[in-house]
Image (cartoon, rainbow, N blue to C red):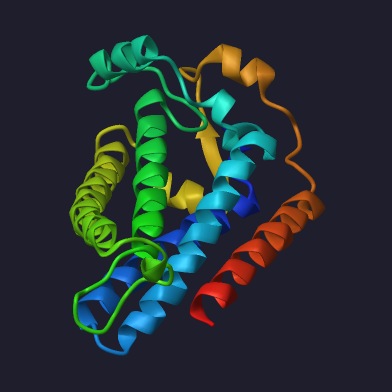
Length: 227
């Protein structure tokens, strides 16, 4: 066994910032009142994080790229069948079921951010672009925004349950791996993936350039919306 660098710094920072931001969104939403201004600002931050992760999923390091961990439904089914087997296959990056979790969270969070832009509470608070659509459409967006928040909570619960399962049953230190970037390689890891894994991550200038471009675009959108 040996330690292998799996998660690059951009992915780890994205993961940490997203977790803190989601917590902030739920806290500010429940507090209401003036806290909703912070809710809007954090929403734009989440939007920027999601856009960055999608872009990094195409140009990032090996294990960050979607093409290297998103697999066909048949592969997900095969992996799920052997999930409880002690000698089941291990993956350095996301396993096939973990890939579905990533896509589900990214999709629901993106949907939450978009619907939030056009939502309203029928009293005094409304999304930055609620006045650009009809009241009926804004009300529908508000309804979807609330329903989707419950779906996000369910996905987060499943995500946490999976971490506990892999930590205690599979003996995989997923939290430690996401914090340090390193994971233990063992003989049951897919040899095809090991053969294709590059030795070095993407240069940091590429991630910082991506962050600055996306950050500038989201900031401009936020300033225009929040005025």
